[in-house]
Length: 244
Length: 234
Image 1 (cartoon, chains in turn red, cyan):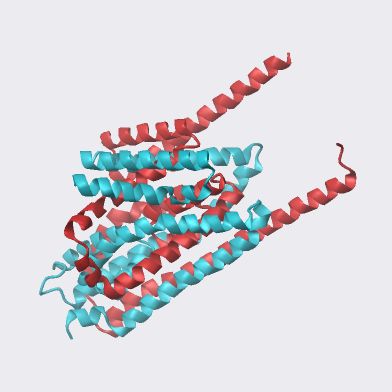
Image 2: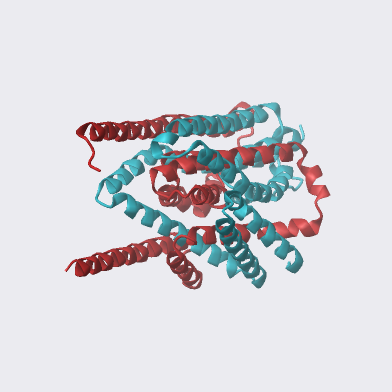
């Protein structure tokens, strides 16, 4: 059935409004994301300044500097590597949300990926980005909802949980990563195998620890993109052959 | 004034409260704006609700996991600073390591008798300013990352390429994370295998029975199953 010119025009207009709405969503995200993160940066600086100079507990710059250098050695690389490498999954709004909330690898990413999986949205698409935004915001609320009673009654809660159960809590991280990996790999099992093979390889190679994740990610992306290109070119040539 | 009173003083609670409210405020603003944009990306209201529910369920396990570390940190650096650092960037694990390093840089140990207000201030400097590293990068560079993505997706087959890159990047990252946990001990390996098995079964069952809510709980089941195995073998 051929579409009339009018129908096409209407359709184009719909697509255009959709573009505009999504554009507005991202512009909005930049504005509020920067504003909220900016406020927290200021507060983060104000707290130690208050302790040092209003209350007069200044420990001396030398101690602060020494502690800071040690801390940078621990997390300095993550400052740059994490926002850049997780961006593809989180999108603009997801990045602002995740990096304010923290617990990115163990909470935000699994939540975002699970939500994308449930509603069948691919990471890196617009629908995927909106899904990630909703999921991470919900995860952030849940995190705070769990934390508040703990902060108020923490030591009591800890005294009721038996030691043996507390010991089992160390296994939360491997359980999350195993589940995550599977959920992501269900769609692309081959990608999953490549990721895990490089992952195992990384644990055996003598590279600095903070680079291992990045190198693994980089290699997996390269191999998967090449593989995908190879498959597309194969199917197109097959298609041409059938045509002939 | 004893150190525990300094660590739990009213002003510190005010700082903590302000930070937590900013995090909550940001969440509300983003959910509202995502709901407004929802129909333009072809998402139904039911899907939007399902996305939030899944996110919340998936976060229960990790949030509970933070409790143990947060509670031990609380006794050492006080409640407000722990809350502030756990609610915003940083995970409890990194923060406790940072607190240890800061107190030893000042020449004392956490929880000892000579741990005074100056040592506590050193920790506050390290954790607060240390955490802003991520925030500054996010503040300045998210916009450039956004334009970079736009360039890729504008190309022919761009969105498809972005999907491949995103999926592969995630699998690469979690492939390493999972492998790194697996090599820690045979118990860790067993826990990972259990959670992989449970996830596969849950997701296959969800597809077979056409029950989408099962998918929402997949990660939750995997964590509970993994912990149960960990409890009996650990």
